[in-house]
Amino acid sequence: MIEGKLYLAGQSDFSPAKLYLQAGGYQIHVEGGASSVGSIEQLNISDRLGNIARKITLPDGSVFESKENNAIDTALRNNQKSSGFMGFVHVLERNMALAIFSIFITAGVIFSSLKWGLPFASHVIAQTLPESANQALSNNVLEFLDEHILEESKLGRDQQERLRQHFVDSIVPLYQAEESPEFKLHFRFWPLGEDGSIANALALPSGDIIVTDRFIELAQSQDEIDIVLLHEMGHVVERHSLEQVIEGSAIIIVVSMAFGDVSWLADMGVGVGSFLISSFYSRSHETEADKFAYEHSLSAGINPASLGLILNRMEQDMLHKDDASNKTDNDDSTAELSESEQAENNSEDSYEDKSNDLSGYFSTHPSSAERVAMGERYQHCFDQGLTLCPQINQQE
Image 1 (cartoon, rainbow, N blue to C red):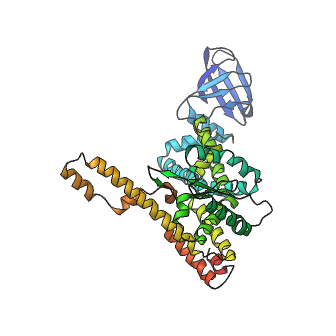
Image 2: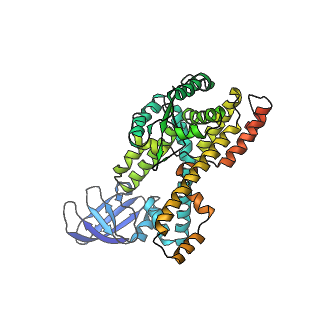
Image 3: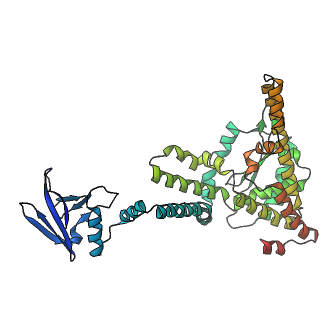
């Protein structure tokens, strides 16, 4: 027997009542009134939430309300009717150890989904989409970069044309596929501060590859330029930008479902915003692009070690710029400090601090030392005149 209140359909007044649940049926007896009978399956029983009163809706719209939650749960179990997910939640509320265990399990599932599940799913989806998806993702990106970040190249026209023609004649043909992107090479100046510039190379999903003047200046051989271009082609061929956009969009959808309207995040998933966010590839993407470059460098007679050499030189160039910038800032700030304060600040400087100032681009890439090591393994095959490196594939 379960005691409670019965609210007749369409009325706010209630009457004391008793509910009996047994043998797959129910009976409600109202003090001084009529009784109601029927099947348990006809009842709409609210989920349990703590000790809040449960509401049981009858077929005619009347509502029986009771705080005897334990009695209701027992009656439902005896009649083989589940109390629903909230019944499990109530069990967690009463068992702290089980609740903590469930939190860790949930956190583990979420972590695994983000670390392995989402990247795998985005890779599968990206590979099945048509080539037009890459083109759509790149719409107006180059125009945006030219307007807000990059400037016209200061390299000579003859040098640009020579490098571009070499790219078209010798590098692009190394990759042959039915739906191969239309690769194009662009030169830009990326300013940094008053007199500096940034050495970088980046690829749009459409196949447009941008190299900066400073990168060309740092390159000491054609091999170093070519293997970086192959690396960027690898990002395009493997559709890394598209994978990043799919991952970001999935996260936005989950956040929207969990917290409601987050329309301000949507700009990160489309157009220019998505590309700028996606340009910071994961380490696995960088490794795939490196492997693409190394494998194709063998067939082209390009020294594989060139990639590690040029990237290390670019990293050192960026470190020097950070050091110079920090020194200028420190000179300006320490001019107003006492001698004791300056001594204390100087004692706290370390190489680790300098490394932390390195641009975000390099922080998301495998270290140049790792790339040099991989390049040396491929170079071993290169030195033997091989165009394939089977022992590398076996190791990886």
